[in-house]
Every structure is written in structure tokens, then in C-alpha cells.
Length: 222
Image (cartoon, rainbow, N blue to C red):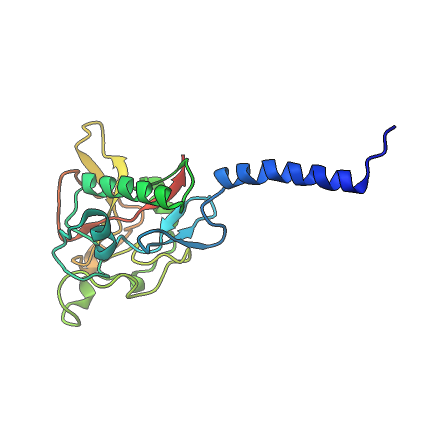
């Protein structure tokens, strides 16, 4: 039997690694660990299921970087983007995917999108009313949205999953394909309206825009 020298084994190992490492880099998540930051300064948090979720709702500053406009009614760079319809949110996700691919922040096969209702309910789990921007603040601060992250996170480290702005989901409501699911509640709710916000499923016409409706993105491998 031919004896393989240590040097030959070492060279064969290097060749093997040269093949394997590029392959892994194409299929792995953009960054290993708990957090990543993309081309527009948006922080994302990795879920145990493997996909990434915006740590905060999309802010007006981030939205403007992709669209060169700010349609929000309650102005503030670090306030959530609102007054956007479902198509606006989807278009933002597509532009952000293209920008991150071009910058090498993500690999092909990964994309930004709106969460499904099921995904939203998973990552919103454990959110507390005490960490919700809603109508209990009347008289304590100005009317409207507040800067993202003003209160505490949920157990996954995500902020504003309850309150501040309703968040668009990917799902259609029913077979008519007119209305989309919204989740999480908004700044204009009062105390009697905040029960069971994680499992409840309000809906809105996909073309509706309002000063209490924004969105959060996920980054997922397709």
C-alpha cells in the first residue's frame, strides 16, 4: 500500500478546504451571531429558526435612503416610517435586497420581505404591554409615534412589536385578495383595545395609507 506523506496529506487538505469554504460562504447566513447591520444601518436580530428580523420597525431615515422621500405624518428620522401602503413596503424590501446584494452584505438566495402572520406571531412572543407605545401616554408626550426603541424589548430583543405603528404582514385576508393582515397595534390605541394583540388579526386594504401603519422586515433564505 502506498504511504502518503504528511506533506501530501497537508496539500490535499488545503485543496479540499479551497473547495468547501467558498461553497459554505454562498449558503451560509450573511453574518454569524446574534446581530447584523445592513447597508442602510438597519440592525437585524437572528431568530433560532435561522431567519433575521429587523430589531426595530423601519425608520423614516432608513425608508428615505431607499426612496428619497419621507411620506410619514409624524416626522422624525428615528421614528417609524408610516403612511405607507402594502405595496410601498414590498417595494422597499426589493430595493433593500438589491442594495445588500450589490454591497456584498447578503448572498444570493437571501431576500428581505414582510413577515407572514405566523412568523410575526413567533418573533413577537413575550412582548409586554409595559413596553408598548399607545394611548396611555396621553398628556405625557406629544401625539403620534415615538422614536423606535423608546421602551424595552421582548425576549428576542426586538423593540416596538407592540404599539407605535401597526405592521404590515405578507398574508392576504381571505380569498378576495384585497385586504392584508396587520399586527401589533399602534400609538393611537387606548387601554381597552390592547388585549391579545399578538394573536389578533386586524386587516386593512392593501392600498390604505395611514399615520399609524408601518412595517418591519425579515431577511430569509429562499
